Image 1 (cartoon, rainbow, N blue to C red):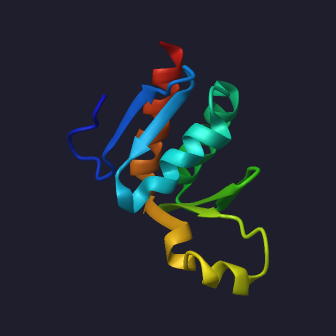
Image 2 (cartoon, rainbow, N blue to C red):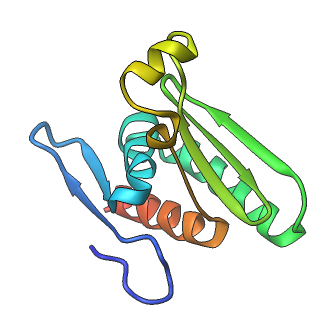
Length: 125
């Protein structure tokens, strides 16, 4: 299922070798796919709760919503969605491996809502 049209985030949903849902998102926004696959997984109620918050922010055009998982966090505001990998050590350890720029990505709020709606619909099948 590819998203074509006005959305800027390209993605595909599929099942992995263990029949778990997996979101594959283009490289620039790859962490969004990891967040969907690993943090939300098949938890539709949690995904719907985040979607409701995103839609509220889009409608009200103000405010912020933070969601923290075991490894990834998401922050939504009235125009964008940001996901980042939580540091497990101090900042010096991060710099030895991947830089912080490789551990975060951002997308427009409308694109994020489209991605999340697609994930919820995929899980319903």
